[in-house]
Length: 395
Image (cartoon, rainbow, N blue to C red; front, side, top):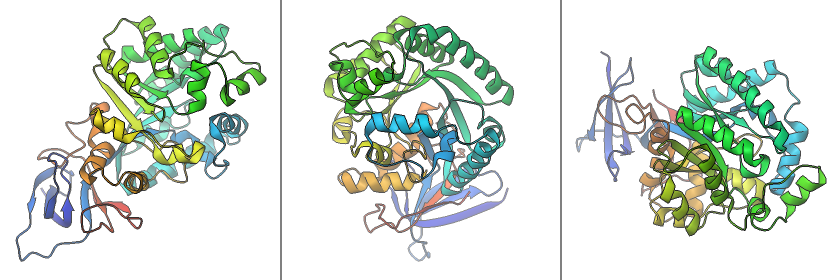
């Protein structure tokens, strides 16, 4: 065993609510196993910054890395979809694989130990299978026309076989209410539930809500203009519509792990409806992506008031300038300074690990775990990130 000890002004174990000031982490330098944590002696020289467990990027589309810097910001959801449709296929598989490798390597170096990732094809599978970062891949399906359902499900079943052969954890998942016929939404949800996990884009924009509530708005107009079917106008939120479609997969309650992503338009009655039927639900936020597309943020105060299990993601390089978890934390702290740093880090590490069922290994500094150790620089006197903060993997 090669024992190593490192120090920092703040050590966020995330097993405890408060950080250790002037603390240390002792670990096996060969295996990464945590051996002990604690406070330094009064006369010990302490390094600057904060030590935190490796991050879990709870929502990413790493296969879209070829779209970096190609999108116009502030287009709204309908405009963003138009850009995706126009640009997503410009690169071939070899180029996409090259960029997946590059960005996964960067995330790893920046401290991401695991990721919940969305895939529409197999271009990321070989990289994921060999990478040090753990990923659970959600094979996202969409298709607005009812007659597409059988073909889409057949295609995703074949993609599942490719993922299984590559040796990566993967399962089908529905994309969102606005890109799917009711039947496809239920069938893909059922396929994901059988594997125990769903990651679902939920209430990302007001345009999405208007589509379900009133059958109007920019997204509705976009769909009609392009000759596409639209979901039924329910007069209810898109999250409640999703819950109704889940009931066609199997009756509530849902003990499977369900990740609701974005939640920009989340309201109290939506939270109540989800809690009533979902026993293991996490709520992913991607603040920089939400600002990029429609200059909006999720209702974090409401989410905290309800004790929701929030997880943090970056979304893709089509809607973000980077896949930088610390940049997301800086955004949260800038807009919600009342949220304790330990809570933000719990969103960035432990809650994502719990969603992925990896909390026995990741998410906290506790003896015997191997979460990865990350140093965040330029921490202020209260232990918070600053605009100059950066992260770097120690092990």
